[in-house]
Length: 177
Length: 207
View 1: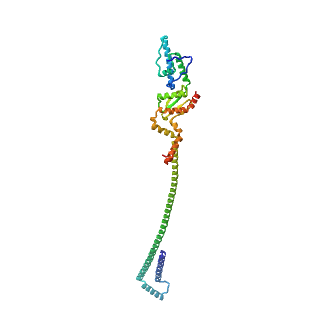
View 2: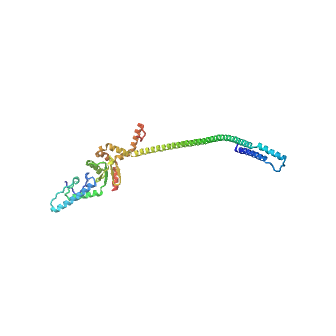
View 3: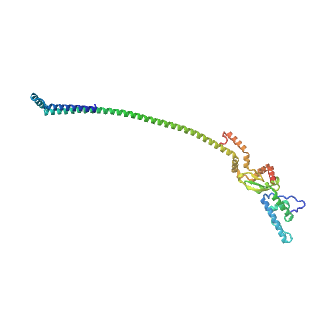
C-alpha cells in the first residue's frame, strides 16, 4: 500500500461496489472495529508491530482505490472521516427493478451514477416484478418511472393510431374484435 | 160458457121445478071456504082428476123427467164447461208457448249480445295489451341497445385507458422471461441520461 502524504490530502473515492447505505454502514462498523482492534493489540503488544486483522473485500477495495494503509492511524482516521461524511451528506436514491440485478449490472449503473449524478451517491435496490422491463427511480422528492409500462402509456396515442389504421384496412370498426 | 152461466141455468131449473111443485101442491089443496054443492062437486071432481092425473107414477115420471132433464142440462153444461176449459187450456198453452218462446228468444238474444259485448271487450283489451306490450318491448329493446352500446363504449374506454398495461402485460407474458436486466441497461441508462438534469436538481434541492 502506498504511503500518502497528509500535506495534500486527496479526496477519497468510494468504489462502485459500495452501492448502498447498507454497504456503507458495514464499512463504517468495520473501520471502527479495525480501529479498536489495532488499538487493543498495540496496547497489549507494548509498541511492537501488529498485523492488520482480516478485512472484508469492500474494505480492501476502498483502501486499494484510495491508496490507504489501514495500519496507519491517520489513514484510518481519514477513512472514518470520509465514511462519516458520506453517510451524512451523500444523496440516497431508490431504484426498483423487475428482477434482482447482477454485480456487473450494478457496477455499470453505479459507475454512471457516480460519474453523472454525484460522486458518492448511494443506491437502495428494490424489487417490483410488475414493472416488467425498465426501472422506477425515487429521489428525495420525486419519482421517475422508467418502466416499459410507462413508456407504452406515453406512446398510447401512437398505439391507438396504429390500431385504427389496422382496423380501417381490414374494414373492422375500431374497438371490435 | 163459464161457471156463472152454469149456475144461472141450474138456478133457473131449480126455480122452475119449485114453482111447478108449488103449483101442484096448491092445486092439490082444496080451500075450506068455498061453497058446498056444485063447487064441492067440482072441487071433488077436480081433486079426483088431479089425483087421477097426478098420481104417484106421473109424479115419479115428472121427477124422473126432471132428473133426466137436469142431468142432461148438467151434462151439457159440463160438456160445454169441459170444451170451454179445453179451449181455454189450449189457448193458455198457446199463449204460454208464445210468451215463453218470446221471452226465451229475448233472453237468449240479450245473453248473446252480452257475450258478444264481452268478447268485444276482451278483444279490445287484448289488442290494447298487445299494443302496450309492443311499446314496452320497443322501449326495452331501445334501453337494452343503449345499455349494450354504453357497455361497449365503457369497455373500449377501459381498454384504451389501460392499453399500456395490456400491451405491457402481453409483452411480459410473451418475452418477459427472455429479457435480462443486462439487456435493459442501455435503455435504463438512456432514460437516466434524459432525466439527468431533473434528478440532479431534485437531489440538490433535497440536500
